[in-house]
Length: 285
Image: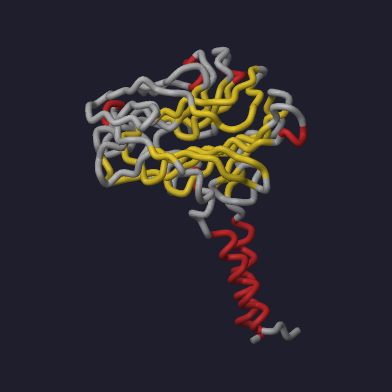
């Protein structure tokens, strides 16, 4: 059997690209407003600028542009906290590396860790409105952010999206976490060493009941080395309810989670198929 060489090469390249390409999860935009440089701040009108360790700001609620029903409570605004999370009732400034259900308050945390943007080489938190999949959306970006205490030798880039799905029912929305780079997991104050080890980051959300079963945390949360790039549960090389590596989609309908919460790894089957095609090409070319 003679297989056209051109077909084999194109198919192999496509499969390899699909299986190995990373860094495309974060959606451009959602950056019309920038926060100031701070350690444990919450966005305040005009930006939270505080140079001190543990420096907080008063914190102002930010309108997201539509209503979302989060576990039975309708919200139209959030407090944007530097430490990789948003809250609905009040700011959450200081970082304490606890499991999310310990918060005893509703919280959405794409990467709950000790973010510190005071170093000039660190990015700052940005947010704004846009669209995703043709639907209105509100997003918060933590792009190229450093870690406590004023380190930027390693940086993380991640994003939170609220996507309006009112077309399926009042208050319905999709909650999306996007990750392009996760190089650090811990701050100096949490027994970390150069951003690694210690009491590491947690990824997920909770309704604030304090009941672990009513909290979603991705596997690897709180486990040093698990979620960083190259780790066994690396956020950039897994996905959830999505065909994009680094993207985790949670469908919230009627105030409740309606989709699976077990991430899928990058499909290594595609790599195997591509390798097989290359072998066939060599044999029959």
